[in-house]
Amino acid sequence: MKLPHKLTGIAFAAYMAGIIAFVVSAALTLINTGLGAGYLARVLHGYAVAFPVAFTCVLVFRPVVLFLVKKTVHPPPSA
Image 1: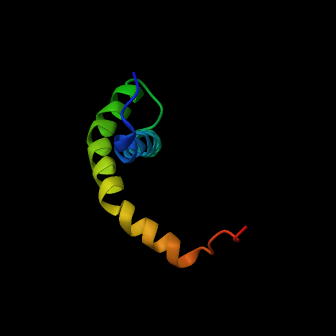
Image 2 (image 1 turned 45 degrees about the horizontal axis):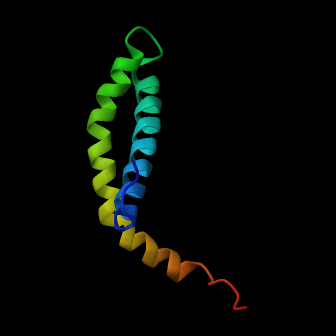
């Protein structure tokens, strides 16, 4: 099943937030508690908190980031 095109921004935010939140949760859990028994459960617990925060941030700050990119990156050359 595919989403309608109008939900592209939401899908992007969900995938980006999901990947980043998982990687950051895994890294911070490893740093703080080590790679021992229950590691994955601890990562998933952190991920459950991190994903909604990351998803909201991607949605809220996307316009700001697009503006900053526009101001700091040259447009492609005209054909």
